[in-house]
Image 1 (tube, rainbow, N blue to C red):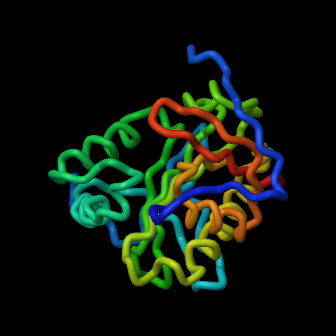
Image 2: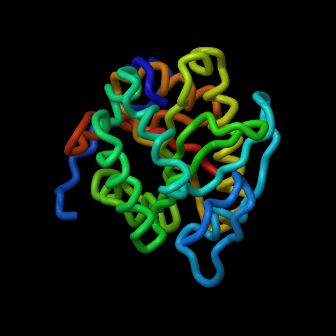
Image 3: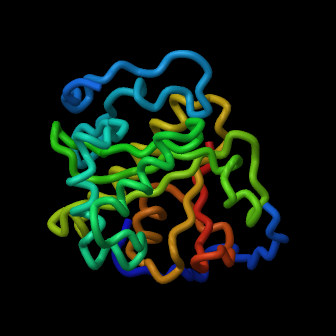
Length: 222
């Protein structure tokens, strides 16, 4: 979650991985959309439902561009968020990022995190084993990745992020029985994000040089 980053801790097993690259109608109200039907790379995120967390009741609601673009673009223009997401600027820039996922094959699902009925965070749930990330670490079939940002500065630095990360990881493992672990790759400079992942039960397994950052590979095993 965008906020300052580093991530070395003497108790963790850290390795440098250098694998070869080479690799219509009005919007529905939050949480009321019907889930997709049929095969789905992520086992129907829209149908996962709510989960109780220490911060409140959280539900992942897949993004709808016409309803949600303005809100997500506003969050992306927060300098603290932009330092790691790099999507500040006109709303169309965020829109293109969202549309690439929404128009894809379902291996990445952009969602609002709706806490006690209010959208307050942005999430991407994705198949890490089908993502370019898999070129940079020893991926396992059905590894599931998460990206997250907390929209309001008032919700950062108070432990809310860790509570939500724990809840989302629980949702992933509950609704994706084939998933062996939940994966994240925050920038190593983002110490607050790494600390939140650790507090949510993730461990730092390695560091890896990705095309756009040096990342801490965070894993939560089943």
